[in-house]
Image 1 (spheres, rainbow, N blue to C red):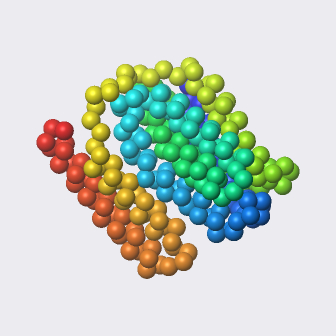
Image 2 (cartoon, rainbow, N blue to C red; image 1 turned 60 degrees about the vertical axis):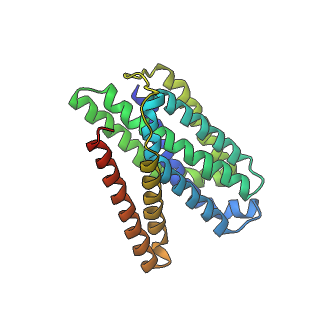
Image 3 (cartoon, rainbow, N blue to C red; image 1 turned 30 degrees about the horizontal axis):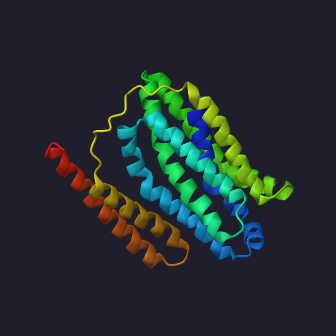
Length: 243
């Protein structure tokens, strides 16, 4: 049960770092600029940040395993679309949007399922250790593996590699059982989802602006913290009201 969850964290961490070494090749092949590829990377990070908390909430309504599998499928389609993209627009759709949405859908179930499936303290700690280790390896190995694949074959093969890993995870995930049934009646906090998404986008945008403008970075991060503060106030108010 642990293998597919750990591999999912690995491939998402891998995707977040492997494109950095392929920027030049991708920009030349897609007839765009280095800035265009960097924009695609930025949009991926923003989509993932904006949808991570709402994605976690949806696991209550639709089931943790179901959302995990659906996230893998969306991510896999995005990886294949990126591999065959003829231009920057299709790359943004496949990598930035679909892979970003897929990541936001599948990562929350990884940690929720691990918590529910490994109930004993030692086994749970060991499971989280393995998942965190695979995540670290994925982030560190992303540029290395991506660079090797790009040099030996093509940058497009790096996305095919991602799709193959996703296929393996889907096969391994068939044995996962969701300990809790889905509850379609669970309410969805739209206001909270919007506040959390806007706050996280502002924070991530601020971090990405660090290299260009420190004042802009500070303003964006402070604005993000303020919006996230409103998010937590909103959540607490709903809790006190029994909602």
